[in-house]
Length: 144
Image (cartoon, rainbow, N blue to C red; front, side, top):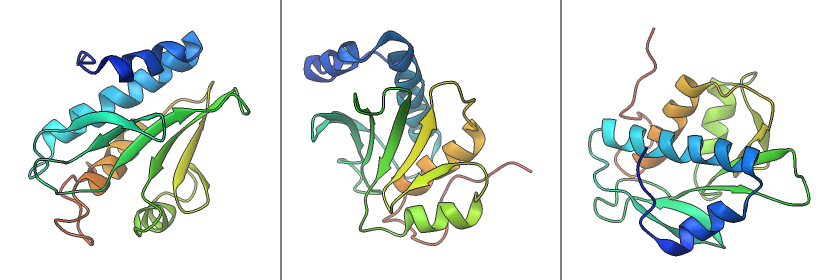
């Protein structure tokens, strides 16, 4: 596990209910490990955007911000957010129409009890983190 260095980010994770916190920490780890394995991404900045953990490619400027969050108004779900001004969600809908629950043009929603399709999700993460390198060909490939 990558330690959380920013105390404000750590405080947000601590504020989530324990079962959801564990799920969000798994998403966080998937983002960081995918970033480390994806060529051109470089160091990831972990910060807060709109009061939610956000992951930016500040050093390389290779990609688009990813956020993860839980909302008290829908307590059995959590989500990964992508920039709504990109074509990312449209692409993910085309590639994975039956593997994710999409809401609007910005997020993938996960039920607390659902098993994450981590290979597909890692592909989505890599696509976001390399969005400015190549809008058509993410650097991370799905294995056959």
